[in-house]
Structures are given as structure tokens and as C-alpha cells.
Length: 143
Image 1 (cartoon, rainbow, N blue to C red):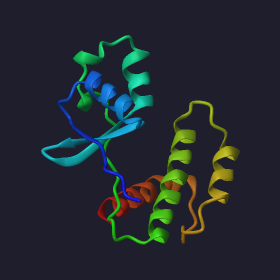
Image 2 (image 1 turned 180 degrees about the vertical axis):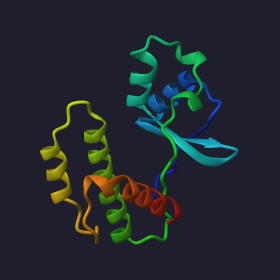
Image 3 (image 1 turned 90 degrees about the horizontal axis):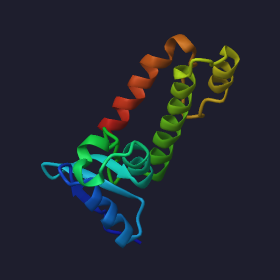
Image 4 (image 1 turned 120 degrees about the horizontal axis):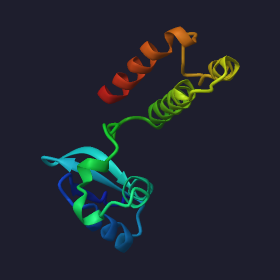
């Protein structure tokens, strides 16, 4: 089953995006810039970046709240490649979240590294994580 992807331009007001999401029953919209995918707006993003900050949705443009860059994968990519890419991204985001917390414990980080996805072919430590993260990020962007 293939569904059409709902897209909106980056200059579209959040109020219109929110209305379109409600009508179509979806929770996220791909945001385009000059016709190319540039980011994504989700219902959670609207709630946290507009509603919870008491901003007026009709005055906020998609570009101001979209998550970007938008990581994509080619349609001809194998399911295995897609799963490996997702696995690496989730692993990296979990570690990054822990490292950015003020109160992270080194044992927490060590436990994450010990549970690295099997697609990682090299040992990862705190000192090698950020270069590894950038390598994964750019490899997925270019795939």
C-alpha cells in the first residue's frame, strides 16, 4: 500500500498545517523548500513549539518550527539497510540525549555503549562517539 505524502511549503502558516493534519487524520507533514523536502512538522512539534509557548499559530511559519534536516532513504534501498540506518540513528540519539543531560552518570553511558546495535562494526566509547555520530549522520544523508 502506498499513501501520498502530505507536503507544505516552508512559508505555510502553522494554522493551515494544523487544519490540514486534522482533515487528513495525519500526525506529520513534510515541509518543502523550493519543492524539495527540507524538514518535518509534527502535531507534537506544534503543541510544544506553538501552543505551549502561547504563540499564535497563524503568525508562525512552518520553517520556524520544523525539524530539520530531514533524513531520507532512497526508495530502492533494502529493508535491511533501512533497519540498520534507523537502528544507528536511535542508538546515537539515545546516547546524545544522555550526554546532554546535566546529571548523566558514566555508568549510564557505558551501558548504552555495551548495547550498541549489531550493525556497528567498531567499539564505541565516550571519546569516539561524536566522530562516529557525524559519520553515521552523513552516511545516512548520502544513502
